[in-house]
Image 1 (cartoon, rainbow, N blue to C red):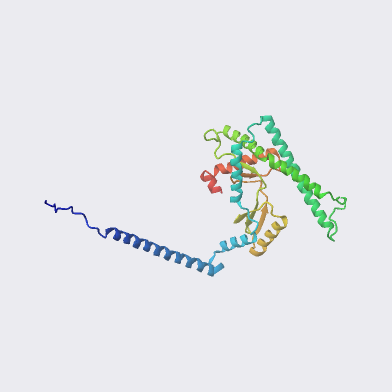
Image 2: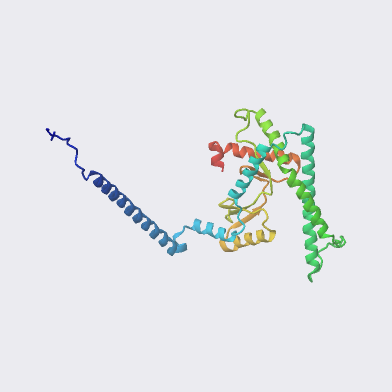
Length: 303
């Protein structure tokens, strides 16, 4: 029997896969060393800036930081407000709270809401006055009454607060529906005027009834110019406002003015409800205009 001694020439294993793997690891090591090198340089620079402290900052940056220190704890969180407001608008979009209402029912609901908003404002003012009267009665200060006015009589603060809480609860329950009605009306007028994309205005008309933040405006004392500004929480007290204005004047030799605003061109826009219906409608349209113009260079340069 003859044995076939021929055989296939199978390739012997080489070290190429191992060589390729070593090259990959070598390059990865170089990249990591470079990364750590630049991280070290960045950390050194940041540490140097921190050690230099105020000497490193420009005069404008120092002033900006000083204003931030004065207003710390009272700054308005726009991102947080927008996140929660957009979430509520998404819920209202799917629930469509005003879809089942006739035109007459919708108009009556809006008017009733606006009337209650006025009542809420009046009750809030009365409650603040009663709290001040109570505080004055507990102190040794003389009553601050004009000679031609009789002393104010104290009212039941608990009853006032209960009435205010009931009105606020009703407002909170009907607010999404009222906002949806007004949004539809303003959007319809804008669409009729030609501001529409696919049959609807763009950006969509979205607003929220809320107390807008206060605005801090800082300018030089020798001319009128807005050099710095901040948005402060809406519930910033009058005493805090006066203290901040005086601190900026005394510490920075700048004029400061903190004022209420009627709305804010956020998205959704902020609009107060303790006003007339005509004012609310015009403000919703006005603030939508800011959002619309922000899509163009004119609005961007204005902002």
